[in-house]
Image 1 (cartoon, protein in one colour):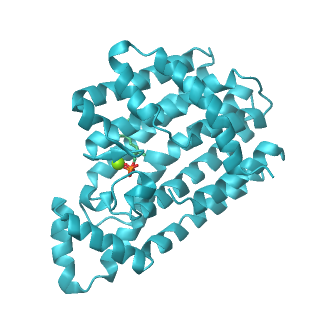
Image 2 (spheres, protein in one colour):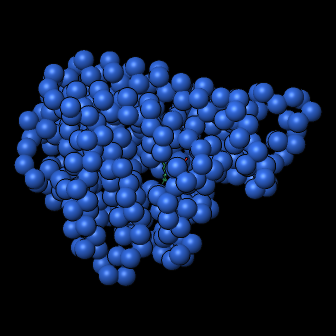
Image 3 (cartoon, protein in one colour):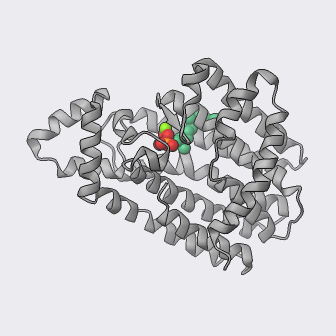
Length: 321
Ligand code: FPP
Ligand code: MG
């Protein structure tokens, strides 16, 4: 039986080859640091979305992999920058690039990858692809800026949280789907339907990601409870804060404001969140966006790729790392 994971694994081989090709074309001083994250074994979800979308609307051939690497290059650029902003210690199971190579080289490597992604996009000679990619980068940066503006505050609403994740994650998954459809010459309605699918898939993806923040580092490749230190008011933390007795809230608020949780605090709070099931409850919030994405699929051609898109929703709903 063809499952989403088998399609993902199958495509990873050619996607990784195309990424190696992009890496080899990078100027020598940037190659090691870019490669440290680019070739560290990501899921390659975004390239798969681009491939599926392009094929759903009739595009074919191995040339599609050159298109599909574009969103992954942008994604890795955001990760390089994000780990500097978040002072994160690890990524994809490896020590963060900025801790090995330094902050300035990590930022420059992200900038270079963004430029290389634009260069690759321009090489297709289709202006709408550039519009799509630049809009996705712009909205990703806007989502991240929104998050930073509210960092270390326990005041903002669930709606604001959703706006943030739609920006910082949703727009790039939307762009990944849109890119394939535009390349294949899909109709306007179809482009919008697959874009809406990607946006809702992306929101669901980040909600699940924020629930997984409380899983073991051995499973996720990222520090457990990093969001506590980073002052990100995500759904599991919202639920934990509501659960705390009044007398403990002030102390929590102080530590959340300053990022002053000790290593023991983090282990204890992560264990509490898991024991109380707040991570599971938070995951369930992704269902609303999975349902919206599912509805978008009804507006798409009923082909193999549409079925794989449907399975991607289950993959995101159930993913453990
Ligand atoms: C991960 O979130 C970060 C993002 C999804 C987006 C990061 C975006 C930027 C840094 C904007 C500027 C960069 C570019 C190139 C446009 P997270 O920190 O919650 O997740 P994590 O646990 O994986 O770090
Ligand atoms: Mg981060």
